[in-house]
Amino acid sequence: MQHDPLVPWSQIDTVLLDMDGTLLDLHFDNHFWLEVIPQKLAEKLNQPLAQTKAYMTAECAKVFGEIQWYCLDFWQEKLDLDIVSAKREIQHLITLREDTIPFLDALKNSGREVVLVTNAHRGSLSLKVEMTQLDSHITRLISTHDYGVTKESQQLWQALQQDVPFDPQRTLFVDDSIPILHAAKTFGIAHLLCVDNPDSRKPLRGVTEFPSVVDYRNEIPFMQ
Image 1 (cartoon, rainbow, N blue to C red):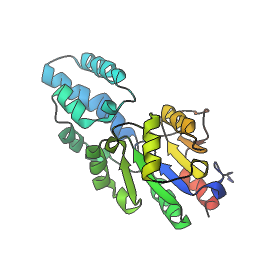
Image 2: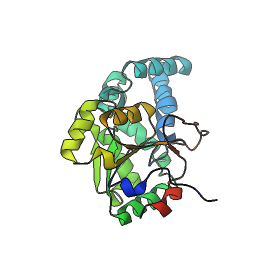
Image 3: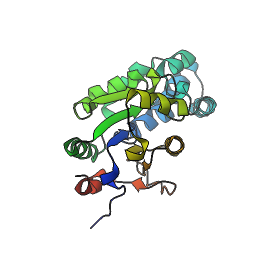
Image 4: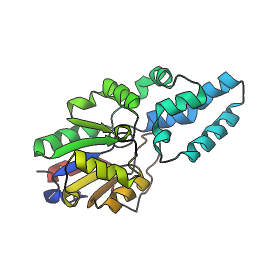
């Protein structure tokens, strides 16, 4: 089946990529935060699982989109749980999307600058690089924790452009978060792609606000 390109590749010099749900299957993170942590909290506090799930939902909502939401140190202190050790218990669930490596290799061969920009804490980033060897396919891996603000913030995009000079009009940004894509659009990034299937265990989301991608491999023939 013939596909049309989702983006005008001839107009793109720089590609900025999210990590979780964009290059990695989001199932690991969803399972960890929605199931594993509430279970550990229920055991620790001797509370019903439904109660700790409700608690986590409420606490996450308070800091959604802020640096604390993504910060392992914040949650470790708040919950008094060893978050990194808990992640290692299910690290076998950390997997790349099937289309990630072909896509990254094609980008590299095309000569474009490729940069990973993730809101993930450095602790999460290190574990995921260890499990996937993502760093052998992308030269620059950036955690927004280094800037103290997230991709939801215009401050992040301003700082990032100082650090990694790019022309917003000739840049593609790929993420699975619609609020983050809106922030990138506000900053002026011209080419945006939303991942429609970030979690392999869940159905397509039916994204309509941005061009959406299901399989990066369909873009490879157009990238030269």
